[in-house]
Image (tube, rainbow, N blue to C red; front, side, top):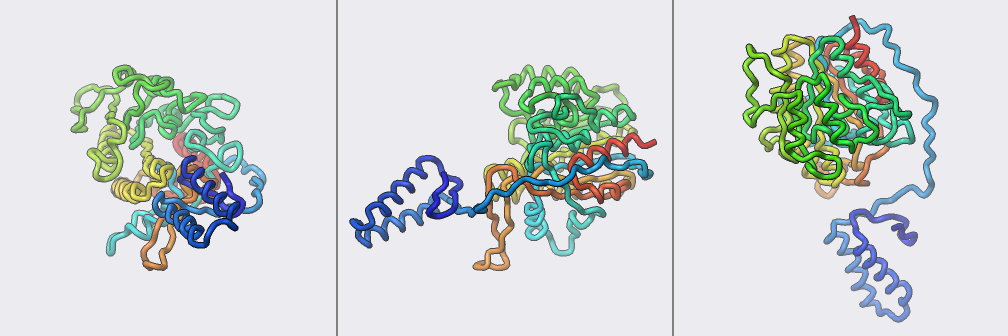
Length: 418
């Protein structure tokens, strides 16, 4: 609800709170002649105090509508000049992370004498994550673009905007004798991991995505389960039965099978929100280490997708504390990945985001300078560009990326390079 007398809107308030404020406003403004100054003062104090009690914010919006006018479409990426081929590729997608999230990590979570993980990347840039329609996107559309090299519409997984199947990075990798793996701290059929293995009209088609995962060439799958038995999500027994058609399920120890035995691809499945920050057992860093150990033991090149969902989940709820914990998890996991890449010498590490969530601002608190505070402008996705960072052989090809679909196009070309 918008109130013209203040020229702003209120967030984080439910209908009951709106009704209270509206009633106070009417009481004061319509009956101001009959209201004593003391009563008016008390009512105004209650109104102002409620902002603190209910943790409300006043956010100013532009007075005019800003027209969406993105300019001419970019041409398809030129890949004829590619000549440096990485043996392995690790794609790290921090769902919901924008430049302000990154700024917060760089300005508040670095230690003296220890190089920042962000400084270790050779290529640092940005890309426009919008979908095929309008300035915004969701994880389905953006992850599909990153995984396939084609921009598409909201909610869609692995299809173009006309419903045609798109070949994804993992499918190209399998055709070229790569192993493939997914590590996520979200549920395994969530939009980002699903875009690398499935083709379906809606990201909510959980059973369809699970069946496609089980019939894919995926070699490793670590992640959570969520909302079992609700809507299109199979119950626990049915979900595990589907996964067992392809994967050997690891227990909580995450101990890998003996290498001299013929085994199925492996999966480690966890309960909802069991994998969050560094205090979780296991956490994203530990799962990524196990995945790298397994994939290197297969003696084939590999493509590994690592996803952190923490920025998106926290930012949708404007949960500042969870953002800070999630950033530490992302940086710790990245540190392990970059150490692996440095020792290996043949692994490309690509870090990016599918979109920004929350309109986060890392603001300066001049009352407590140089400390900072987090300010939120929304609980939804925003139409802002997001980071892309690269290190390792082939990383220089991502320096000129400006749209998310260019990432997928380059990845497929690098994998196919002879």
